[in-house]
Image 1 (cartoon, helix red, strand yellow):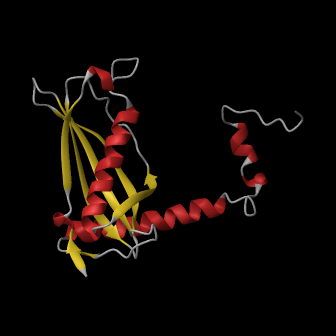
Image 2 (cartoon, rainbow, N blue to C red):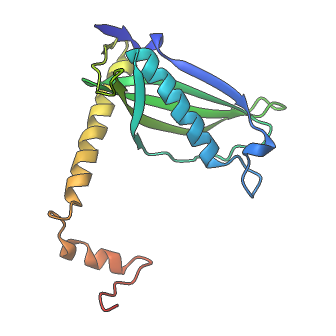
Length: 180
């Protein structure tokens, strides 16, 4: 079975309240991450018709601060489908109510895994790629998975070669001291 991404796209808009702010008066990143996780869950569950869990989050860069009183809109869409997993692309924007100015606050990719009623991984419907953009997003998800695999194996304890990293680390704000 295959489904269109547009059939499971989800969007939510929420007013940012003082209770969502951190000590500097900006909206707390943790609040935004919580909203992102909720919308990724909603999108993946809608696509798979199963309860879904977050397996990983690929890169959350907070590009612009969000102010109290702004409207925050989160948009989620399935970019990739594996056998039991999906990559949900998220975009977060804030809007100043007075000026109408919209800021891109962050984009991220949540890998979600579908679970059946017994908690076992469940097969998910494939994705119908009906635009050039949908093919690009699907291919980019595959490339990101490959990069993550290469990164994790390079730094696996059994593969790690300290001599390849020592000189670079010495140029950083760190001190190597094995004589503690």
